[in-house]
Length: 142
Image 1 (cartoon, rainbow, N blue to C red):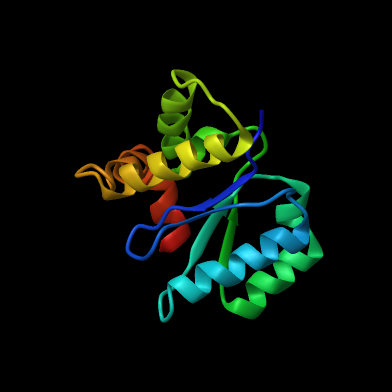
Image 2: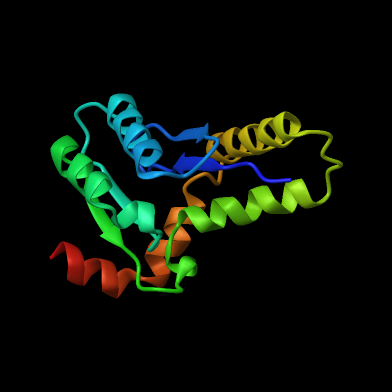
């Protein structure tokens, strides 16, 4: 069973998780609009893997139109994305749960995502990532 989840894990704004039936560029563009809507007036930097939908002209154009800064990871390096720490935590929870339906799976994922974002350690994922990749971040920002 599979749940196609889109998630935005924010350091200083509003997190967002949504489920789609597929991962087409149109779906990504809709999600980008929701990220900006939920984080009005904030600079949005989005770290993405190398999915075709992330690199599509539609997605890149929509991000530019919305003022979103896209940072693409090198190929085969999901460990460089801070949201992967969140997904790892969610997968741990799902792996020990008897999933009854696709909707049940989505509910578990969303509930765990909310639990993680509201936990005392919610920024620990990003903090760990920043500590690990401090030099690389500094070279991009400065």
